[in-house]
Image (tube, rainbow, N blue to C red; front, side, top):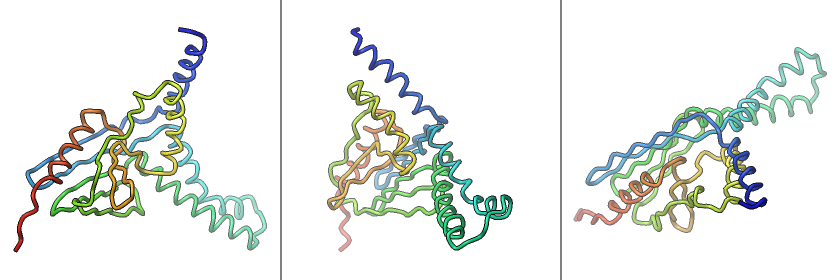
Length: 209
């Protein structure tokens, strides 16, 4: 191994520190002849959890600054500490709860695919017509990337976890949009889920006439 590869390998091992978190890996799938249910837990890192938990403290910044530290209450103070900070704190709490308690559920029934996020608040159920779902595929496996790109992926993981709920182990196209689902699956689980969705897509639609 030459010096360049040794340096890259050291950087890669160091970058893995950024991916350490609570082990919440869980994947369940229950296929039936005309329906499908699957669920997957959220992914987290200690760094992302620490940052979002810290941001929750902004809820109390106005009280601390205004009533404990005795700062003068002005219009600017109210906007900053009782509007902006609580807003950021709410977003941080929402993300923190997702990191430690979140899960995504997938259901297919009656020619519809629905995605639901549970374990936090301010979420919205997504519903898709199965017939318009196209090109169901696996996201690029991080382990198959070149070493340098693995390093970048490890570093960017926290950015994804801070600002979104779903990393996207599985992707499909829907009316010109790219839809991502689930967070931490192995190759066998990805293949199983894709196969079951495709089986229902290919299933003939019942004649209701």
